Image (cartoon, rainbow over all chains, first blue to last red; front, side):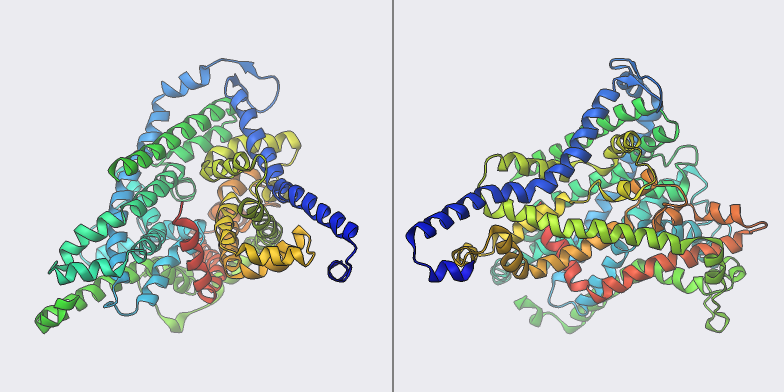
Length: 306
Length: 291
């Protein structure tokens, strides 16, 4: 067809093929997005609407559902175990995110400096945990942090310190999971912050150096303000991830001991094992509202300071 | 930077040593658990729990691997993961750039609404969809099927979002030239856009493989039967499986097999990552920052 168009000078033919091309250009985008739209309607919109209705009923997976109005929502919102799961995720957030962002920023600054040697090697090494399968790492954590036979306690014993029940005491289980999560994702945050740093114009630093600003002052007065957006973006990403944390408690602690690692995500999953699907549906929506509100809050904070 | 030359040499040395020292400690912390697990998997099972910190190469054995392959149908887990990986991965790698092309280079009615759908899917936490989707799968009779593992999320919203940014910078003149030559819109996509964005696609491919291979939340909910379990699902309940299948399995045996299975699950991704790390890091960078 391409050759025809170029060699054939019949005006009517040209007009007709132009018109056909125009029509194709109007239709094409719809055809191109159709597969996505089909999947979106079938596996996002439909289940969400179905679940919204279900969240107002009591249903255990079979038989007829009974309408309970806001019953599931009030049940959850007045249930200490629901709030305990949110609190567990909140504490994990506190244990993970602030420290992680600070460490990642320091490392990103070092990796961005031309004075640091082996930068490529470090970048690769730090991202390895992020690439590896979470379940495999969680299983390795189980072995490493075992109270009686684990390598971590063996190391402590070498230093003359006593065994710690990393996964068997409610005081230590949360920090141990927090460490797993931080270990797994800090490399990712480093990479994100590094790209934020690389977008800062080097001339800004040169000007500051000429004005006699020490590296320390440059860090606080140039680097931190200019990567704040990227930092907030990382915070939003990590907040979403922490409240969804599921595989870690599922594999490592099964939510225990004494529910101390029952995260918001794991609590949600427990409705499935108990076949309490109406409550599970309501819990899904509560979690969506909470996480969305939190993300919007962070975005607001970011805008307000700019 | 200019002032470093005037600083005493000793101070510079300390700064360099401190910086390299910190990075080295972090490297050990980040690589330690993985290296320890892979090396320990080759130790005799009893030695893993009795001397967890010692590494004696002369005692290395494949016993843990042999027993693990005997006790756990891990090859079947690899097969299930492989099937999902090929089908689901191809769907994302083909349909996401196609939709992204429409969003990047066309004006059409409802475009903003549909792109809003992409953004909503992107922001919706995965975990809150599992109960809705599970109920849908029950309704369809798809629990423990490949469809259930493959179709939900098969055209990744993030991939569309990212590829739209990549395709936006392809010059319009290039596309128009192809149209003047009589290319249909799909041919423009296939023979012009796809070759131009190949580096971006490579990044997307690596990221997609990693995401699907590591995916756990949805597979464990939708397909937890032993016949349909993916590698990760199988790995998550490995200790129970070993103690269930093997009479008199002690802690050492279970630990040895657990580390062997974890290493087997880790190594393919490590190889892909090391071979293609440039694409991979570019992938994360390009995709995540402009969120």
